[in-house]
Length: 69
Image 1 (tube, rainbow, N blue to C red):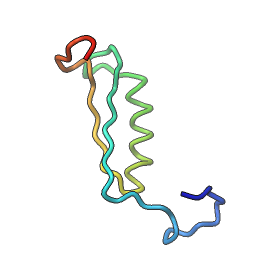
Image 2: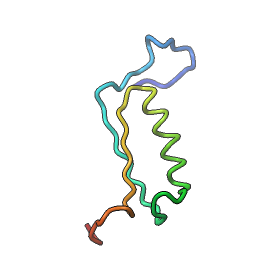
Image 3: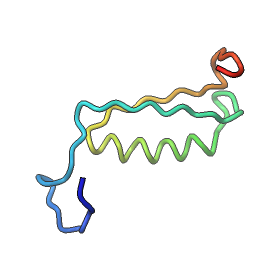
């Protein structure tokens, strides 16, 4: 990737089609309680989706994940 100079057109903008990202939200608040981390993930996800990335989110506290794993 090259630095963004602000002069790029849509045709020359980098694309990340085919990439997938998973955000793991490690907040201590259970769903559906609002989490500040969720807001940050939402903003980052929107940017990634605009560039063709498939994005998912997992809230760790809502799953039975063993400590230390």
